[in-house]
Image (tube, rainbow, N blue to C red; front, side, top):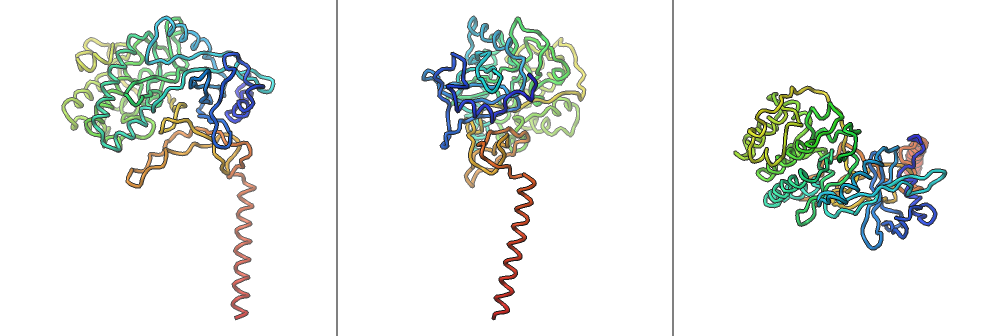
Length: 409
């Protein structure tokens, strides 16, 4: 099928509202989709899929339905087989369903996985830095280092370690989501995705080939960010853009340029953060597949890179990103009645804050949210014209009334 023939998130909302007719997979029989006050299914829409929270056999689950053609069937099958043989707390598992939803003349696949509790790492840090809770951030840093140890022995390469794909529970337990970039042994080494550029080594953005150590650099970027924020939470205000923690892709290709403020700032935080920053700079200057582990970088510093093949940083790269899992409060978005189109629109920003809290940062990437089919597009040119005419007519009527009132006086 072409991309135009795949259902939109709006179409999937209509389909799951009629599960007896449209939900055809046996694995999904009896699924109860979460709905808002109007009975419209809750959905979180991203660039390539729509995710529906639901309950199945008494357990909270997430059903991911693709809105564009996908080539991930074998990836999810191989991942499921691997996790059956070698379970990992970091990967909650995901089951590929070849024919999940029937709509029109088509049958469409889905990925079924447990609903992961907690918040995205970005959301958790937004709260912790606002409260200047350095103990919480420090605990997240140590917990993440332990999670990196688990990742190193999991036999799985996630492929897109970033703020939106790392979930953290209230007790500090980490889990990884979004497995479209996952690699396990048996899959081709040529990957379709290379990960979020604000976390990836510059060389990773130049090649589609994956290595067993592909997650080390972005995981170390995450760890350095956490340690820096634990020492100086206001770095979040200075360098967090909504599409990173505190680093950007330009920082990694600009390690030798004095104008990259982040490096000078980190050198002034404290000795531990300065050492970590120096190690990260050194990691940018070697081939990423020569970086063995996050633990080695933390404990040995630049010594862990001794003998590594040098890499000359250039300015090429590609961009991906965004998270489909949760809003800033860790909950999926719910369509609300509003004067917008019956197609994708923009999800509002983070939840309203108290007056004493800083204004939320506007996210540069707009994520579509499904709206009720009966909604009307506020940007419709005809409606805008009608509104303008109505306004002008109102002004004329008001002017005439004032003139008659004054004349009568």
